[in-house]
Length: 434
Image (tube, rainbow, N blue to C red; front, side, top):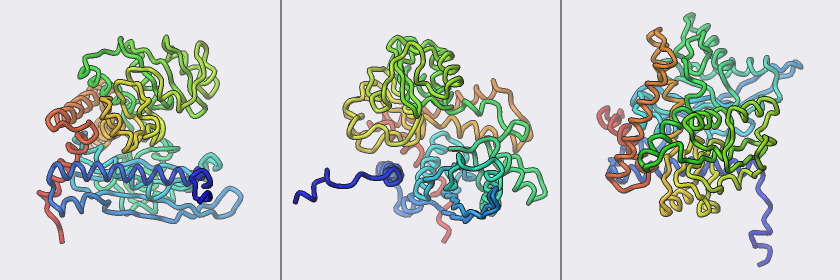
């Protein structure tokens, strides 16, 4: 019997753990859909239709490398049912991308767009590759071939891609150029997150962090608090985490700890965010910043604070550490940072959680603004974009909070109920084509 003890089992590889995370994220999204569907008393045919995506596309991408050899890459695009409008979602480049991960992110994007009252449903794409080991020319060849392969199912009225992990304005510009050349017509509304000269929007870079800031602002109001009396811990100091930190810092909040892939830093008296940003620019990491002590990422989550902001990876708050979380509120800027088991524990402990499909929806909301501007060929200034973003984030928060208070459910279930109800209503009035 000794050989059957858990301690004797081999440790899971990074790839195996990542796959478990993908499955967990997808299962969690489906679980909350099922809970929302039950509470909303959805018809059986609506449940079966909305629980799964409309389309999963897998493409082979042969690319000529700089040394003259041909390397094959596998690419994906998953789309949900376009009941409210076109599909919308990013494209990521990563060596561990799988169709399961892409599907999980596409379903989360569906509910995110719906909870924000946007005329989109979710999509997601990706290529299994390691861009760090590829030249710019190789990445361009791969991007353009991928764009050509998915061209039949994307477009301003079908599916609008955007940047994601290890993609950005550059890749979006290549996609616009490739498809525009094929169609003999400039198509700025084809993607969002592109350079401004091609129709990109003001305010796009910091949109997710800014949106999270507005959700944090509404959360503090609901709890009878304000930024000046709030200390905040942020896991992740990339684009999203930095902008969240900056906006909160500017309002007088005390940012006591942040982290990146190299580790975390902590100062109970607060970190100077502008100086920390310069340190990151100079050294490539937050670690080693003056007047701070080193803290491991896993320990950072358990620091004493008022607000915890997971802005890094999925499945960071789990059944193992949820009981040790000391924050009064959690603003989820990462996708799926809290596991299903941890979510139950936090709710029972009275921790207020602003879920990912609400809190990190600022990026897709400004992407919607970009798409609207591209369709009209009329562009807004940064102040207009920010004004509209605040309005959309605030109204979405109040819709979810109202559902939370009216039905006595945690905020995540409330967000799914708001979101699923809207998509289900569209399915119901359109009917089932058979």
